[in-house]
Image (tube, rainbow, N blue to C red; front, side, top):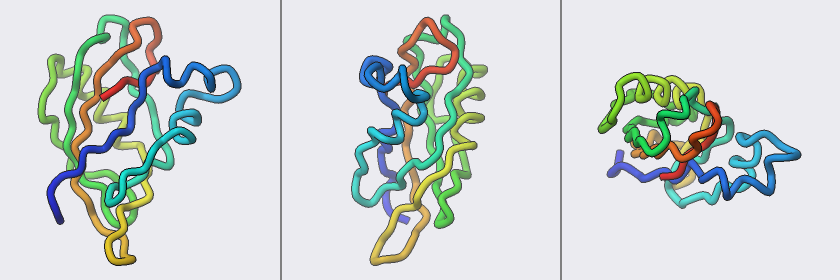
Length: 129
């Protein structure tokens, strides 16, 4: 496994606003995701359940997306609130990915995922990294 890949998976609510009326935020995110070569691609995402008081906090995760596209081996690298960190981990554990492909073969890939909570008004909004 090579060095960890930064996975840019979360977008600010403002970037999703044009999609919000017709689709869920999760659907809008998946449709707008820009793939980075050599990194796993999210194909199903779950939003963490956060409170308005969590706005401005960041949780940085490190995990592996295996060759089957399942995230595992989670580690919380940094956080300001243990309860928030647990909520973010619980949500990302439910995500599904198209695994990274190297030389035509699916491979396990280590991922760094900083999650910055940006929407103070709703409990299930995406954040930016």
